[in-house]
Image 1 (cartoon, rainbow, N blue to C red):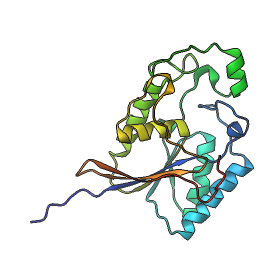
Image 2 (image 1 turned 90 degrees about the horizontal axis):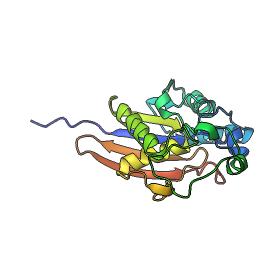
Image 3 (image 1 turned 120 degrees about the horizontal axis):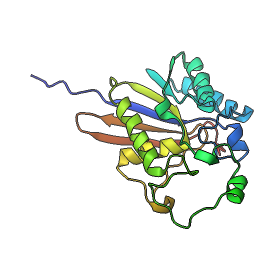
Length: 214
């Protein structure tokens, strides 16, 4: 008698298109900025690429922040899919830095010479450890679903910590350690095999539809 092994999860992690906050070099966090026209063009270009490549998804799960929501809506409309909005996939809460330009943050706040992963960002926002734990919870909740083909539309900071959770690397002091690049509308493709507890990372920072995605 052949044992029925659980099917794998196919997970695509997608960062949103360029937002007004990106274009203005702002610490966006959970401040809600829409896409720029360039960001919408990036999302449409990706949707067209996936249609030509006959890419299929069973479910789309998106952060409810408008830059992710718009990106998800453009792609879901092109691929005839419905979207589920999940707050666990929100970007990092940047506390008092949210919405400020990089210059404003440098000029108006004192920055310690050494930080630990347990220190908050922006005085009362999520530090690296807190964000890592939320990323792990988002991943855990996803894997409670049935194995299928999932598109997750989220943000660079949160997706970085999801990748850290996948490879088993905890946050380090002073923002040291490994970083996973996610350009605007770049995506990573992962496969999770529950019966082996094995992750395969097939693609990282793929933005072939928009080569100058930063």
